[in-house]
Structures are given as C-alpha cells and as structure tokens.
Length: 336
Image (cartoon, rainbow, N blue to C red):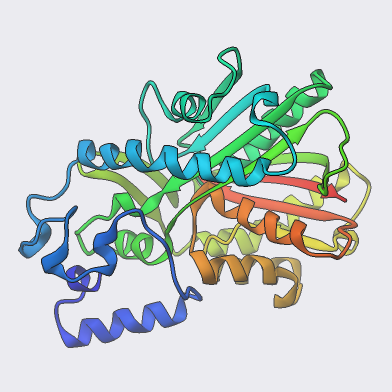
C-alpha cells in the first residue's frame, strides 16, 4: 500500500501517521504479496503503477480458491465438540467480497460432506451488518422449527479489492480492512454448551447517509465509499436507534452490561462512545478485534461476539450493532 500511495518521503510519513492513528496493529490477507518484497509478488504485477492491474476475474478466482477453505475451518472450529456436521439442518453463507454460482454454500456442502438435502441460503453484498441479518434469518427459522440447527458462516476477503488510485476512499479502505472468516451455530433447542439466548432484533435505515457508505462492482474489483461523515452520522443518531430498540423490551441503556459493536474503525467506535456517553472500556472487545484484525466487514462482529462468549463473566444483557450501506443499522440483544 505504501509503495503505491506514498512514493515520496513526505507522503510516506503521512501514511505512517495514518497507520499509527488507526488503532490497528495488524491484519491478515489471503494475498501473500502484502508482506513480501516487490520482486516476490505473485498476484500484483512487478511494474510501476501495478499494470496490468488485476481484473475482477482474477480476484474472484482467488476468492473461489481461498474462501471455501477459510469457511470450512471456521465452521469446524465452531462445531467442534458441540455438534456433528451431519446434524446441521440449515446453512447460511455471508459475504460481500466475492460471489459466484455455484457459490460458497455449495462449496462448503461438498468440502464438509454436509447432507445434500440441507436448507441453504446466502446473504450477499449487504456489507458489515450482514452477519446480524443472517442471525435474524436463523432466528426466524429456529422459531418455526424447534429442531433446526442453523450454521452461519461469514467470510470476507476484503484485501482482494485493493485499488491503486490514491483517492481518500481507497486509502481508507486499504488502511482499515482485512480478511477473515467466522461461524456461529443457532439452534431451536436448548443444549448444554455455553452460548447466548437471543432476545430481540431491530433494524433501521438512516437515509441521509445513503451515499456515505457504499460498495459497488467494477472491472478491477469492488469499490468502497466510506466518507468521513459516517462517524458524525453515527454519533448523531446511534443513541436514538438504541433507545427505539430497547423500547421493545422496556429497558434502557443502563441495563446493558456488554456492548458488542462492529469495529468499523477507531473513529466509529469513538462516535459510539460519545453518542451513548459511555467510557472506552465498555467497548474494549471491539477495540481489541480492531487492533488485532482490522475491519473484517461482516465477520468482524462475530469475532467480537466470540471474545465476549469466551469470557467467564455472565452476560446479563448484551447489545450488538453493526453498520453498512444504506446507511443501515442492524442490532440485536441477548443474554446468557
């Protein structure tokens, strides 16, 4: 990234400053070029300007090779010691960084030898809030079928979509996003495994931010729009969204013991703090994921949720939220 966006020493210093201010220590990518010297690059051309720049077809070829393997690893990690893969009745795959048909869901069925009669669906191109949307679908399935065992797998290979034009959107995207996969199992029956109980879901659209967060296709990959106005919108409106969500359960902000917030970026988390008038420590799970992995799009909130569920403390009341194109806010509440 620095080689492309910062050709001079002055610009390199600016880039280093941005990195230092991002709250991100490291990220992961399926493309090894990002951690190699230019002469060792395999995906990007070893030429000035990275020309010929990788096409969308080349990026999707990498996605179709890497995404199924990461997804299967995440699924097996989720199911280990809890459920045999043949018991899965429903599969929901989530991604906004790659699409094909046959797609990720069928690839997982084949690689994991899942039942060929399994109910499957995909949540595609909905952005960072998509995992909560998938949870909402799984919750509806479980409420209609007590024997349902729904596996949700969210896999995002954001670094496939690096763009070489030095626009603020491209620099911001390249600075924030990383690759990752996460899975969650939702069932209609109680079991003895440690988990959480979903209480409610709530979704709102903030129309005035419709063009401030966008994700579009291009011949050279997917193009992200993430304006600097997004944190301001969230700071202005998030507390109101939370209040309307909690009204359904006749509770208020003071009843929330755990905040499971999508780590979209340092400024977004700071905007949440200001909007809710809470201290930074309340969002430490989100800050930790941001620091260790960056923004993983839809998979990120499942990383935060896993860290919360792995702690030994009781979760009396959890509030989860993620943001995406629209500007859409998806939320849920839960407890142990």
